[in-house]
Length: 441
Image (cartoon, rainbow, N blue to C red):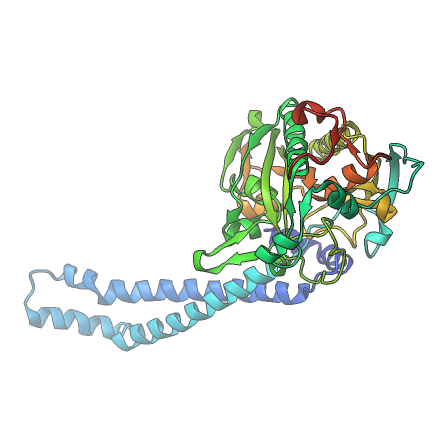
């Protein structure tokens, strides 16, 4: 977690960050809890020293000093110790007091840890001021918006016409917001993922299929708990959670790892199914494939040395990779810089990529590129060797491709007048055809 000494040195900075990021935390309560814990630990250590002194005078050490003596001599030694001000009664009193303080210590440490887990990372000066995603700053747009010479359809109408999805059957099996991709749309999803993975592997990223069922420590370590707890699916019998992004598994796999400096930067690309409850989003964007509970994601994750320049360079590298993938998919998009009110607890700098969806009439988030400095590494104890020092690594992540949301953009942007959907050139080798059209019964 964040260094308490840093928090103590800069309380006003952290109070401002707490307000700006909208986190429900009283920093003064945290600092008071810490000071109380420091004093309590000192008192406990003092009592332990006293207990040990009593034990030394009255315990086995005293008996060993008179070993071989008769009972009368041994009793005389004990009486002498008592006259020296170390009665057995005091030992019992110290033990009882110590036990009570140690119980208090456990409770206080738990409270302190819970408060410390809520402290957000201060952002870089370049992060815009703002309260929500409405205040994010558009930086640039890429790709031309198509001018259709026919009435374009939304993705729901397209998948119905081409027989590419089953919502009724899926929801009978799995409930609200469930879906099943059929035929070429299922193959198109696989093609998108394989293209993204192949692109990144060609740029030195190690492919990983990370775990999607993880411990609470992994969710806390990557910064998704405690604030994101209500959006996670919990497997109570196994003390596990389903991850909402494969970033969790990719990063938490390296818990307690000590890298050699020469091993950094480390670049990883993960592919996994992801799960989100979307708590608080009832009634919003529930039609079709836009906001669902289960989705597939290719994620970029990187670890760098603990220098801001290195972290930001990697941030822009991952951002560039995502843009290159969208350009290859022939999709219009825009890049926005995320304001402090919309940035996450652990993020210090962030860009979103929003892809154009014609039927929705605008750009919508498909990628999030986040620089977290040492926020995750401190929680997970991820360090590297640099001379005699052991600095924490910096972590960076960004989406490479997330479906089915990206499929909406592909379907709507590449639809043709005859009702078919053109497959972008970069995906045609994976698909073995140029268009999506009815093929399966």
